[in-house]
Figure 1 (spheres, rainbow, N blue to C red):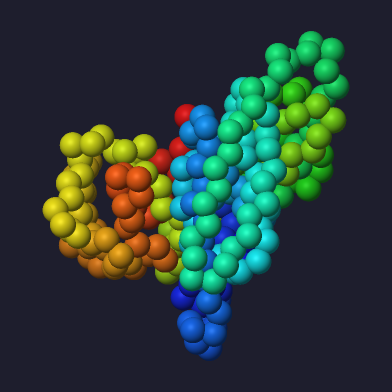
Figure 2: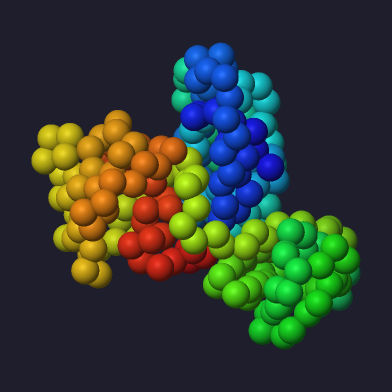
Length: 259
């Protein structure tokens, strides 16, 4: 998991963020990283925690070295080390290499599922499994696991390499929680371009019956008449609008964006 330091220390694990209070926000100076890949759309993991698809801006990281893992179906997984400095946003750009054609005789890999709560049901590639904490041997390539609980469904897509164990961490959705993901994502990856408009620092989103009014650099967002505070604020990066990932997921009902 990632040790975060905005609004205290936020521990992020996939779908859920838990905030831990700290005495003073100024005690720990944070940094961030803007991750891009060629081609775009790679799954991004930081210190073992899934944070979204590239391009993605992750803020509130503790200074020091962090391990970034990049995976995309059809491309070779890559590990990248990033160094975070206080009050700075590091840039990380990686050109992915095409994965070799699957070898029919290739040795299988394995997947290790962690974090599923008691009573959850799991389905790996459409087949029911009950093996949390145990390695499952699977053919190399792309796979999908779906966890269903009384609170909803969580879907994760991942790539398994021959003779390699891929660890997938699942967290139960927590509706009505008071903490939020500090990840932002491109609005156009989730919404049609005519669903949002920008005038100066003001952002207006109208989509699926929702009305959002937000401002660049301000974490307080007016969603359907109620003020919701996210751990990240809207950003403009490379001429594109980036909104809090959790806000985009609430608008679209998509918690497993991976295309």
